[in-house]
Length: 388
Image (tube, rainbow, N blue to C red; front, side, top):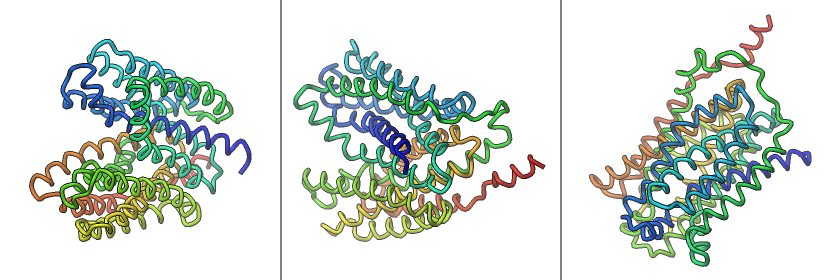
């Protein structure tokens, strides 16, 4: 890989890591924020909700803009907005402005995360798309398990406001770095309506991610509580279990890239979904079997996120002309799946208890697999027709 390729991947990885930190760092800080603004913990939960809802709603719009006007400008704009939103979060004079700051944060991340995926897909060599995407996706996944410790540690020494100040400072540096890094990235020369005749097809394709997210997050959202009530795990054991999960997620993403480039995006995305179904069933069987849970949590994340990465690569290849908006819709589908998954998980544990969650997740994985068998029209054939 050439030096410039490593630079692009490093910038993409660090940028997605910061976006992931912004998403995952808030939860452990909620008690301190509630105390600072004299509101309930339930009220501070709206910080997470408005961020996720804003992201899901506006990501497709930014993806559409990037397909028409280029990704470099949108990513730079997003990082500048990210800086402003985190400064406002750190110094919000009231809880109302704190909520406003998280809406702005959702806007900023929506104009960055899917476009990093898209621009990596744009510049990756034809036979290395899976590998390149897997590397930058691992940045976001690393934040999944590193975000909470980072926030907790910084809060302990400098207070919760310092977390957002540090993220704003890093964001400002990355705005300059990204602006220069993507200077030579190609821009789609398309003036037609990129969604013409494709919206329903795109929505059908990204629905695979929605059901995948349900299969992962209906359990993950309640994982700590599940381990505590079913396995009587201590706080240290729960942290260890989540670490196993996080390591599996990162490794799964990285391994998936190599396999995807070798065996094809469609094949790997389907095979990983089949294994995900089987592992979720095994996770249900061994859910209350003590230390075995570490092993199956590792496998669950390994296979699950391998599937997510390979499907990202599949979308990048099959929708090469609409890559920005498809990646954005896919991220919207992800957040919708996380939201629905958390709702389903709450209902399941109320009705049938925590051990039922893996089986319900396996049903969602089956639906994801069925939807993944749909065919997307081949761009190469379209190109041949248009040229003729």
